[in-house]
Image (cartoon, rainbow, N blue to C red):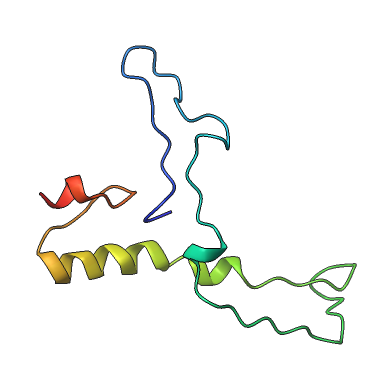
Length: 90
């Protein structure tokens, strides 16, 4: 979200110019750090009737603010919109 994902809109029509995944830049495996996955062998039936749980999304909430703060500390430029692009720093 902070470095790759960006919906671009046509200035005349307001329609999204990258409205399909063929034109939308996504973070891929080579762009991501190595991940450690832990499987739990006991269900959590209080959270879900199927015993499933997920925790990956909650760890992502602070990534974009952390990246923009790091950009500020490195350059002195506050980036107030995502994605962070070189044009925001010039």
